Length: 423
Image 1 (cartoon, rainbow, N blue to C red):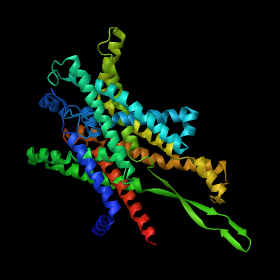
Image 2 (image 1 turned 180 degrees about the vertical axis):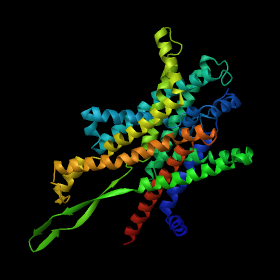
Image 3 (image 1 turned 60 degrees about the vertical axis):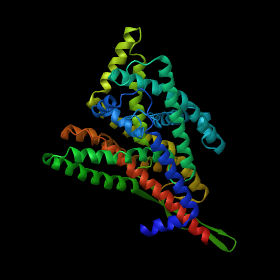
Image 4 (image 1 turned 90 degrees about the horizontal axis):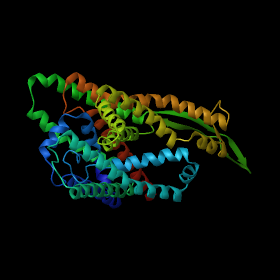
């Protein structure tokens, strides 16, 4: 590891990329401490200490929501916009064709950015309304002008983070959005350690040791699931051209247990928070039916049992959904057939496509089940221990470990590419 760090530092181009990314993350953390004026921070902290859903939302805002900063919505509107276009691509044939071309993907990315702006306004309005209804001491009486100014500032903060994330992604040393979420989670670690030390009691020692053991088991499990893969054997037919023979080699096609990474968790959180925000728009409607429906939605999402079951189902479903989006067995089967490759015992073409699809669905079941259990693990831990401060550890560890693995792989690929350049 020490030699790798020295090697990374010696390569000027790679060193500059990493320093640039670190600089962007520092700017991100600085903006997370610029609060929107007129906020009672103490009342806000008390509300977050007793609300699991708001604590989960604070993870994906990088801690900006808890301090009511200008980036309080984080990258959630951008993620929601991405989900919308990925769903539309499965329904609208034109968008599906556009995704296959570079120019089409660029247009879809541009539309995703445009949609992020109204979504950030809408989510910011819902969040501010939610906080005002949760506690009257947080905002107090503010004028309409101040309210609009808050919406503009918060939306601008979301667009700013979206821009930073894309700048980081362009460096090809990790995914920008994932790294922003990672930085927000890691920045909470000193505070959690400080709270644990300050409130330490000898009677809590077994619980703390249990948390540490579960954290280690979670890290090991995440590494095993992320790195786990099934190698499907592939044989290439021997071809004779003139006096030379080509092909005839045996290789394998790796099918990963968790192809989706942390995306299902991010998608699930974005979706599970959306109904509550929408319900805030109708809580003061003149129609009695809309008011009762909005109240029912808010109340049922505060039920921990319903919240946990829905969270698990969404993570499980999104794992399969995102795998279908990024993994195309039909295209892989066609490419194998074009290059003279085949899976032993399986006919080329549609049979190979069906075999790959069925095999993927079987191994993805393990990954989806693991992600779902990790997602609701914090709720289970809080139910048995009653500790609030560490109740978000499972999801946080999952994201942190997955992002670190993904980033290290990209750095390794950059190093390998430069080694070939030397030859």
